Structures are given as C-alpha cells and as structure tokens.
Image (cartoon, rainbow, N blue to C red; front, side, top):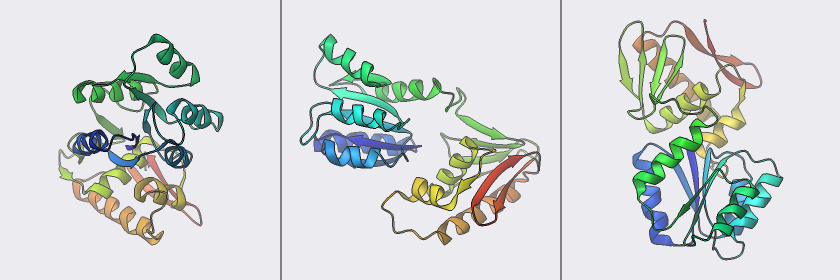
Length: 228
C-alpha cells in the first residue's frame, strides 16, 4: 500500500516513514500543506497521514480540498491538539480517523489497519487471494495453495502483485500501474511495467499457480483474472 505523510515536523516524519516502510508500506513525505495537497490530488495513495498545523495550508483545508475533488484515500489526521471541536471538524470534513500527538507507533499501525478494513482493503489474515494464488502482505511472500510452494518478492514486485490483487477483475492501464508503483513524478518508463509484469508471471509459474493469470489488454494495460 502507498502512504503519503504530510507533516512539518521533520523528525516525526522520518520516524513515521521508517516505521511504515518496515511494515512494507511505500511512503512519500511532504512538509507543508500546499505540497501535500498537490501530491494527494494525484489519487495514487491508499492512506494519507495529515497533520493539522502546517505552513502554507492547514490540514483541515487540505482535507476539505481532497474530499471536494472526490479523492477517496483513507485520511488520518495528526495533531498536537486534543480539543473535541478539532476532532469533530476533521471528521465532518471527511477524515477517517484522528490521532493526537504524541502517540505510540503501534497504535498508529493498528489505526491504519482499522481504517483500511472498513472498506475491505485488508483482510484480517493479511493475505490477499485470487484462485490458488496467495500474497502475504506482511512477509511479502507469493504462494500457491495447490502446491504449497512460496517465494519472496522484491519490493517493486510485491507492490505490483498487491496492486493487481486488490484490483483483480479490473483492467489497469500502464499509466495507472506506473504511477502507483513508481510514483506520480517518477521517470520510470512504461516498459518497466512490462518487465515487472513478466517478473510476476515468472514467480506465479515458479510456485505453480494455475487458477489465475495476468492477462494483457492490447493497447490498454493488464488484468488479473481468476479461473484462467
């Protein structure tokens, strides 16, 4: 999953980034509200951690603009304030949750899992499935339930496999995949997508997956289909 941290306290942002990366999240960081809004509007983030008190634009305004533009990313507000009115404001503007600093990173991780489960994006077992293929989002292992074989995926392979599984049955364009895996401002070329799709197919073949496949849609992109 891809996370955007919008936090002007550099030390806290660094700690949050390292913690989330250790949990296999892909993380980008912005340090002011205007930059955070610009990044958030790309729509590539699953979760946005959004501080309230920031330079250039406060978190409430960022949140209001994101929801006005129909950005559906889960948004968790971070603030040093504990007043009820602030929490109500954030929730009324469309925040999914609200945390008051200082907080334990274990609680933050639990909150992120909770807001994702509300829309069914993370299974309790941390395993995504399609046909006889499974992906463990904690260990980054791809496995086949029929053969019992498994293999560890590299970072980009894991992100691609996760993205395909979370959107199985949907056609994903090369542009969507490139932005999701390499980032909106990445210089990665679209042939990187083809290369990594090939890597995923090879790993699926290695573990013996037979009941799903990644199919190319000519001129558009790719789709993960079960029963193929």
